[in-house]
Length: 321
Image (cartoon, rainbow, N blue to C red; front, side, top):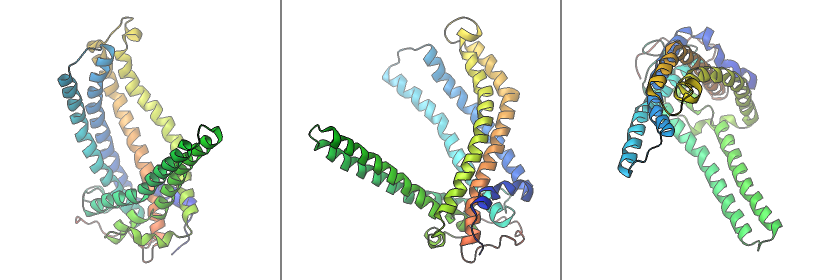
């Protein structure tokens, strides 16, 4: 086993572009298609809400219920598809970051047992990390409320009660981060070992919290700056164009909602702007998630006993789950 390095772990995932270009190509094509489909599916749903805001009308309870059911029934398939897509992405990236090459059905992509194991691991780790956050927050609120209730109007005691409430949330959040970092290798180990490996990784990260936390912090700083700049520009170009088509005070000097103007502006937004925006979104998302999974992969390879040799050749592609 090698020593875990925060800087190496934070930037390991970016090497996927050189290390596994076919998987990157597959992920870009998949993400671009999904982003374009989701945008074309979601924006018309929000157009109805936008029209209602420009031309408010009184609806009966039955009409309101039907309106909301139609809205959320349109979002539901997108949510389920995004969940499956996320597992496909994570599976390909974990395999690439662990073995140097993703083993998949086509361009490194598949939806099999690796992806199912990851989903279950994510749920378990999320619950294990989230429950202390909820418990500490509720405990702080209860104790703080009791102190404030017994203060008798005294400002000092009321302030102490407020501090206790805040401390409960802070402690819970710290526990959430600590547990999450300690279980960082779980998903990668489950992929690398081909079985569920969750709490087995706990002893391997003892004394490594600050290194793992530093890797995540470094990654988030770098990607937050890059994503904020690029996505603001792209989203402004796409959805700003659509919104401008609905704002007749800007486009026509009139008032109210004009479907013809809206459709005309939307056709512009869903032309080259949508293609470029979807492509940029796909690339940035893949890079971020590759770097994020790279931290878990490096933690697994350097800390877990008997982990896959990081310098070994990638195994032959497999079509099995």
